[in-house]
Amino acid sequence: MSAELTIRPARDEDLDALLPLYKHLVPEDPPLDRSEAAAILKRLSRYSGSAVLVGMHGDIVTATCTLIIVPNLTRGGAPFALIENVVTDPEHRNRGFGKAIVEDALRIAWDHDCYKVMLLTGTNNPATLAFYHDIGFEQTKRGFQIRRIPPTADERDPIRPIGE
Image (cartoon, rainbow, N blue to C red; front, side, top):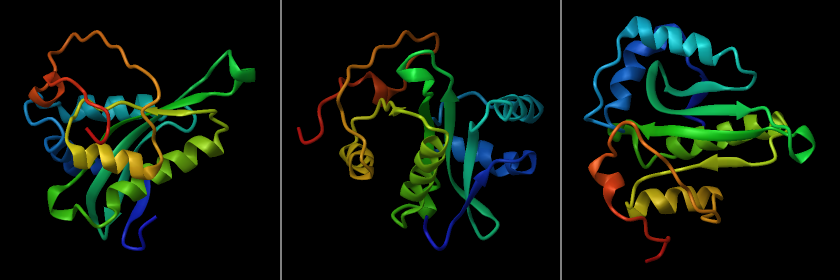
């Protein structure tokens, strides 16, 4: 973790800063009602280890990611984890905050005995792909999805392996 960043699960009082932060991730998303967001956050907290993590620089929410730990009936019952919605406020990028929050999510997953952590991205941005690769993620499987909501412009471009 960065010495400048405190990472913890999001609380209801973080939503006023957290919801605008997501606009940097998907600008065209429709706004989410704050009371609905609070209910979702509360529902997520019921799953052991799962959380929307926030990175606090002082009293400012500067980075976030969502960690979901999924119970599992294979791998001897070892759960697996998903990381989603990774975003750092543009004014606070390139300071290690995004890396710190993803690494903290990984630590939590390993502390919950997850046998793997998965992360999908729809971006072709070489810097974003290198960011995940540098943390230790590998492009080793093929991802498939069916969407009810259309992909963003960045997600419509075909994915190319890192380095191409």
